[in-house]
Image 1 (cartoon, one colour):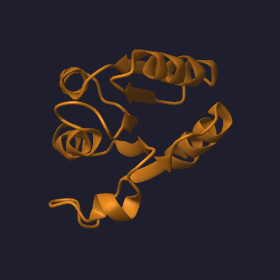
Image 2 (spheres, rainbow, N blue to C red):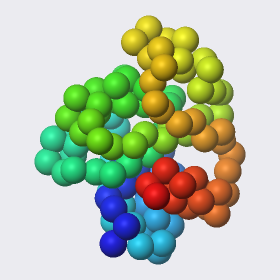
Image 3 (cartoon, rainbow, N blue to C red):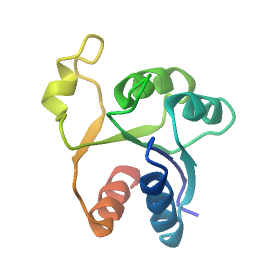
Image 4 (tube, one colour):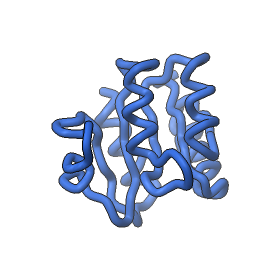
Length: 121
């Protein structure tokens, strides 16, 4: 097994599809449909990587990533966004020089698998 990846997206279809693709590539993938659900999982499971959409209702993906650093400090973070970039995220309060990677939407499954492989190896 290559490590546990937590996929977080309020669009269930996206979260489930990404988890299925990652499972097919040998990862253990868990899907969460909100930041609150993801935080509960992170309190119980040591994940290698958090793959999260940035734009979600309530606590967004960036806020989730900042919170996750407290409970899973060793976890890598890959944020997905069609709007935000690493530069705009680093301009947010508390995010200066954050080690979060950002993957621009849209992307295909191969790009996702390659990017996660790069981050975890």
